[in-house]
Image 1 (cartoon, rainbow, N blue to C red):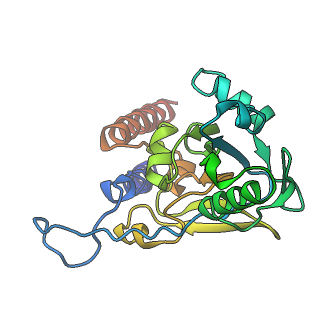
Image 2: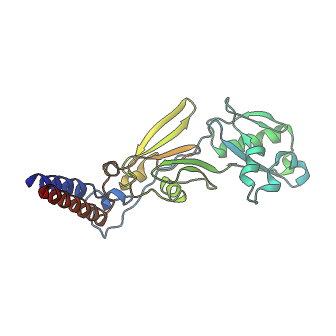
Image 3: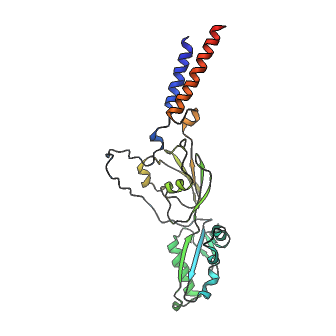
Length: 264
């Protein structure tokens, strides 16, 4: 008689412990001793991005005489339509395995490890030296052709592009549809590209100190991987109501089984 109820007790204990709590899903919690009414100053760290291999650059050259700069702007005629991303892939300047881009007239320019501002100065100086005069009043703009990243795991899987210079990981996750309730926000993995290969980094998005992490701002070609919570693997419900429903079902089966066995 006691065995079924002992088993039920174990099941209830397991399911109750598998509830997903607010601490598991709330972003940027203050885990210090500040009062709830205090204002928290978030000091986000953001280093200038330095161009890597396989990045695609959009380079726009302007001058008083537009005809003189047409050869340098192959994407200018199609950057406002929905096909701009595809256009930039074919007409933008891709950084090759040696860190170079092939620029009209100037030939190969090494841009690996430089910021977009530094590349603007390099291109402008080279054009003034070899092609234009100072009176042409040229203006060079260099931008990354969209910030592309990939999401996997307990969120919508796919590749996403955001047309901004700076994107933090919360913006990237929101753009991808947010992490599911069953995702582990305490240990989000970021797989980042480096010249020597890939590295895996970890960030706890439930802690407000995540905003101070060097990985809070994503970089082009980052992979954001969210693992499932251990509670999900146990098969418990996500809420107390779901767990209660499971407990009632288990209890009903145990009682029915007990009386069937007893009647035999």
